Amino acid sequence: MNYKKRKRRFDILGHIVLGIFVFFAVAPIIWMVVSSLLTQGEIVTGDYGIPMHFENYIEMWRRVNFFQYFRNSFIICSATTAVALSIATLAGYAVSRFKFPGSNIFGVTVLATQMVPGIMFLLPLYLMFIKIQDTFEIQLINTYQGVVIVYSAFFIPFSIWILRGFFASIPTELEEAAIIDGCSRFGAFVRIILPIAKVGIIATGIYIFLMAWDELLFAWVLTTSADVATIPVGIRLYVGNYQNRYDLLMAAGCVTTLPVSIIFFGLQKYFVTGMTAGAVKG
Amino acid sequence: MRLELRQPKINGPKKAVKDEKTRLLHRIKSNKLAYLMITPAVIGMIIIHLIPIVSGLCMSFLKLNQFTLRQFLKAPFIGLDNYRTVLFDPQSTIRSGFLNALRNTAIFGTACSVSVIVIALLLAILLNREFKFRGLARTLLMTPWVVPSFVVGMLWGFMWQNDGIINRVLVDILHILPTKPFWLTGPIVLVAIIIPTIWRQVPFVMLMLLAGLQQIPDEYYEAAEIDGANAWGRFRHVTLPLLRPVLSIQILNGILNYVYSFNIVAMMFGHGAGFPGEYGDLLMTNINRNSFQIWQFGTGAAATVIVMICVMILVALWYKVFQDDLVVND
Image: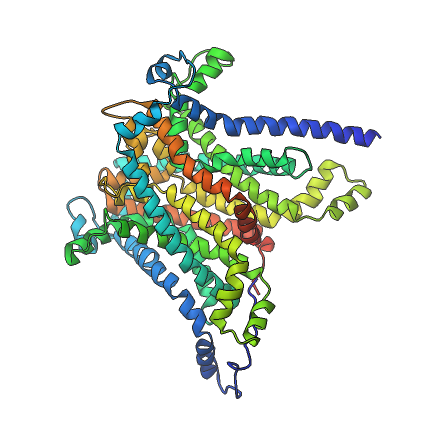
């Protein structure tokens, strides 16, 4: 009796603590939405009116050619996800199933790349791209393909690591049975394993897309012209030398967050099971 | 973790293989498919990882600035001069900036690592109970992770402003502080950087720890309860030891994340163009500014190499501590 009562009290305390953390998690996001619906004057003076200025969401596309940046981000991130995911799926399956000479070195290399900071690649890559441009006249800076190549290669090692864990959790008997039934080795992978691993692959895809959407360092250097520049480059134009429109900046922030939250919350089920199956094993 | 698929009989070895060499050759041959499958990844990693890392190492020995930029690896060789500039030259502004950034990153990294793990673990434990709005609570707690980190930097930079919402709430409404502090200048700036980083990072770690917690069978807790363990005892002797593998991975992730932290800080100050000040500058923002604003690529590469060596030492320490918790291959 006494124990149960104590447990009850502990539960209520737990709910209160949880509630406080939920508040701190959500409050900044709510403020972003609210301030995107205020006027710049209200934000500066602190005389907050009713946040109903939906015209901010029309004005933000006019002030800055935001649609262009949005489209660029979308094209670059989708292409990156497609390329990186297919390459990583093949490699992840290979390291999880085959023990070939060099498989351990490959596995360690994949992990070791995670220890190298982005800027270590960025400096030489930037100079390499300039060099390639000068010698072969192949344009890589300020082109979609240049960015997609860099991003894909950048996200491949981590994706291999997640997918490897995921494939390893699928029993090998399934492929063996398929091979006995006359499937080729690769056919067994395509027909049997891929459908089962769908959850893990989707989870990894979401992860790559979110990471690419969030990429800043390379975007600032590799995409400087408005034709290919991504959102992190374009969003800075709302504040600074020529204008100070925090209301529009926050509106743009909401618009930027919306697609990734739709992807994430729409596919949350896949993400949670997929990521945790692959990542918990480490 | 690495399961070896039994070779189907048709492809299997027909006769006994004689010596090591033919055996290796045979193993390479019989794994042709595996090699084919990793080839695209290997090519990508050679072009975008290996070649740049090697040339980055070379660059740290070259005099690479805006004048020699186009010579790339043919720029004048100056030996260890870049390293000397970064670490020992008392007159160099690059050195003082780098050392400041190193100190700030150490404080920032420690504060973030500890707080993120503690908060995430607390939330994961609280979420690992049966209650009505559990799914909703988890979803709401996940939201900060979905906001792109450059938006996080912008948003918090906006909220920390002197007449921003945080000061209005703390000073005008709750009267916790007597005057409005300037969050974005002076030593206090580190707080303004640490809090958003924790805010963004907790949800993901929480999710991973929650998954780890759910794999601990209830029987263990029941057994501990029968043995008379109180809540703290159960946490100390059941939860923590069984959660160590998951925790260790998240700690490693944290080390890499915080030492190489860039997006949030860069976006908070002048939206990428600004300088967080001597108390707020982190290693990555410092190196990035030196490289792309004053075009000192050589010293930038040298500084990066130094940071990488520090990280490798940290990872080695991490490995020493958590060695036994890692899943042993094969």
